[in-house]
Length: 94
Image (cartoon, rainbow, N blue to C red; front, side, top):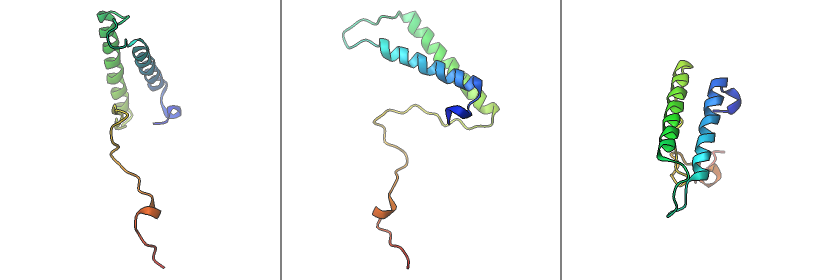
């Protein structure tokens, strides 16, 4: 969904989720190092992300939108593959 077409609540939730996940990414320690944030703060962040997700789902239901947002790994294969027509082996009818 395009950011410009979201409601104010949806934009706020999206920015909060993005900010929290960026903070997590920035403070995640390298292997063998101690985390700079406490376990209680980690739990609070997880709880906030859970609430954000729940509210996003509620808003989507209220607007009769199906929630298709799912987390994906960057190396996860895509469910659809684009096949260029010029390489598909199809011939054009004259």
